[in-house]
Image (cartoon, rainbow, N blue to C red):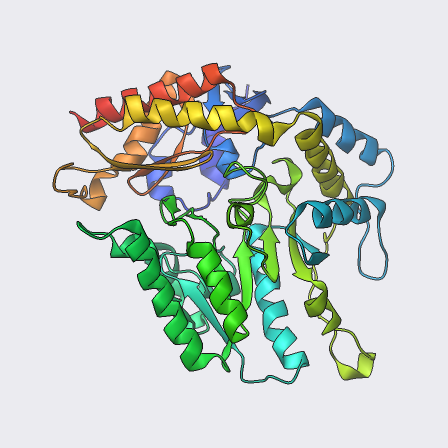
Length: 447
């Protein structure tokens, strides 16, 4: 039998991983999956508490999606969308237009959340160029934003740990603070929201002739630590955009496909973006696939004779991959046939109740932030003073490593322990997820 751990350490380079630490540890090597559980090479089962990095929606080995991929394999696995078209990509585009906010009528495929954002940025930039507004080149971002790891998506990000080293490669942006940064005793969430909106309004009024778009993670800033925005913040951003001729890009890569309790986070505040980036749960967590949706107005700005050079010169070899699109179509069918969003509401309430009773009282939990199935548990050294742990202690990483012995897989964001289970999770599995997390926080932080 092969020693998978040794082979991993010999050949692989893992993402967002200090490989010196990795090679000193014993990696968990997944071999197969069953429903909402992953199974390692030793046969041990673990609840997939972060949906395999926020992508899995219906659990693993979902029969309807498996069957759709096999059936597509019997036809064609991939053919290019450059100069040709393909049935699954057309079918999926039609489905996406029907379920996304009104006005998003055109679908441009890519292969990851980063590229979906990259496409949105380039479309927004070229849109204004095609209309003759050459000065509108600036993008507005939120502090602590994360939109991916390509150079364009990093340029509109704001997490120094991930992004600062690449600063010489990035284009300049304008940044507004996330409402989270205004929090201190005596300031309500509504005041935090209004201060941030006032900041954006001032920038918009001053530089409306230079701003192409603002990009936001609607409702929840995921990689920042599951920061949940105050009610009305997203709608306020949209209103300012409409008043000042600024495009609104909503990055629904993490929040889309039921994670917040609705199909898309925008729906909570009836926001209709000009551009929307989708990935992660798009294929049900099966295959790499992303899409950027645009309004018909934006699409029409790219039409003209070839000699006008209005064409959007961007693409990917695997754009609209047939297998991935077939999986995505099957995933969306499961949403409908199993009334997934309807059934999710009771699970979200149950999760909230357990978090309140088992996690929030723990003395080293500073805050629990939840929006639907997206949960961030902030660990703190001193709860009353909200004192952070020294980064070198790696408390979040230690908790998520410890929780494996209780049969759960989690991944932290610094000292924020993230829970983001598949929508298919059962009530018993929610109990396991929360109780295991509570045990590990107690065992690690109360030492």
